Image 1 (cartoon, one colour):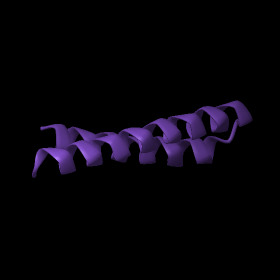
Image 2: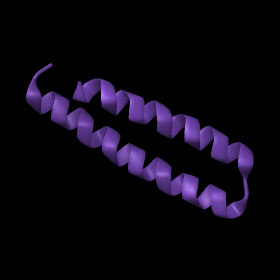
Image 3: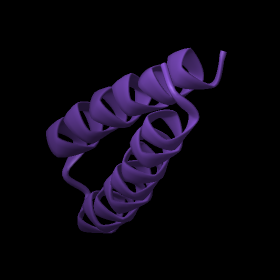
Length: 55
């Protein structure tokens, strides 16, 4: 994978992960446990995708 594409994907996934963490924070404040579980799973999937690009 070329460097500019790799950096672009990393940037996008990083922003997506940050947004997902903010959503998770709001869901935690609202006490919505099912939504928290879904958001945690999504955040983990994004994190794993980031790790695979960085390798």
